[in-house]
Amino acid sequence: MGPVLLLMMLAAENSEVTATPPEHSTGLKFVVAFPENIAYYHPVVAQNMVQLTALYDDTSVNIKSYTFADIEMTLSQGESKNYTLDERMESNSQSISDRVLQITSNNLITVHAINQKQNSVQTALVLPTDKLAKEYLIPPVPEIQGTTLPVNIVTAGVTERGPFRLVIVNGENAGNIVTVKGTNDEKFTLESNHIVQIWLGKTEQFRSVTASYPVAVLFGHTCAMRSSCICGQLYAALPPAKEEKLKFYIPPALANGTEAFVLVSEKTGTKIQDFNPASPLVETAGTAIFYHQGLLLPLIPDTDFAACYVVHSILDTQNFVFIVVNKTFTDGVHVGNLRLENSWQDLKGTDYVSTTVVLVLGKSVIWHASSKMAVYFMGRKNGSWFGNPAAIISTSPDFRGCVLSPEVLKIGEVANSWQESLKYCKDQKMELVSFPEAQHQREVYGKLLQAQGASRQEVWIGMRRSSRSGEWYWLNGVPVNDTNWEEGEPGTVHDGQCAIMSLDENKNFGWSDKGCCEAAKPVCHIEPILLNIS
View 1: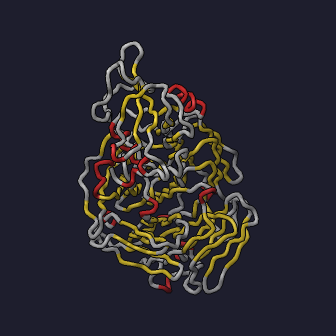
View 2: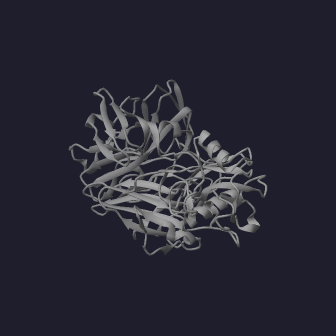
């Protein structure tokens, strides 16, 4: 059993063991902005859309866009729908604007932004408003021939020759004071659901964005050069600023044989670092964004690895996921109902490996049974990559699937009979724990093993003999196959009728039969809620 199974600890004997609630990709409120898209220089309409994915049935979603009529839709669990925006939703001005999309729902959803124009595709994972931050670090501007080089080509007078820019998106908080810090700070006051765009000129040397209330920040260019007289939109949603030193493991396949860089941002400064597949680890006390032609990809630090992700493929493009995981836990990776059987590529000098999975059309759930990993949604169209960190559904590994609500374990406060313990758990809206599968048993033991202050007592579990047949049965109705009886246990039908478990690690959490009227504390349990992965 790996240490990643020991997700949480009992603080005392009557504490609950749970995992963290649904993660930062899921929420109830989102504000989305779409930067100007002049890819290929042609005056054709871009296809800007949001892709909404529901985690629960009967999810009602409201979409309010600029001055247009509201849109209502209802989604079932795991269902995804696209909403295409009016072209007037694009933010093509540096002035403050209210051209944003406001999305609200009654249940948790994920939101994926997609910008397409001819062969130019850009995607971003949209964070809910309650997961936004007050500070972001501005990356160094990549050196792109025909866009930022030569320096004298950059001009404010021609849109496609303009500098890189920031798009700062305010959520629900009116009067949000936003400061873009640099050689000469720029300060703005944004009302609720407003945005402002800032050019990243050479002289200002902007380093960070701070705000009195949380905001989202996009970084990129309306039309970065790809080849002779062909340009494509280039944008990424910046991750919130972090000060601790982080490790970023980069799949070598991202470089795809082309020149690639890592844009590193720290509070003390920025740098553009060449990417060498032989050195796939970047360590920095800040943020890191991977760049190569057509792609700005925020990298996932190991502190943000998760156990379950959801991605949806995009029509008329090649779609993939790139997975990074500790080499010890490759056998726990699943795509849908199937264990992943891919070959893995070592990330040299590290304990991690990566692989690429081709996606089929529709939804794909990528989850791990016992560990955490990084997953990137990636695509390619006409040779150019696009992509973003995949939407995190859960950081709680579980051998049964993708966790929406983690299981709960609780040791009762009072020692009582098996029957009274059963009632106690029901009064807590829980059940006396049934854990028929050996893998689940090991997980429960691992969590209880970490209990702080838990004595080596015995506790009731949800197994007893049938009064009619004398056979043992689980309260949840699952057949009794995997057991952990102590030596010589259980006795005959004339012995104990209820199952009790030792919390003594030296006894390997062994079970024995006891008279049901003896006093012991119960282990109460709530089953996890799992996402339908079919």
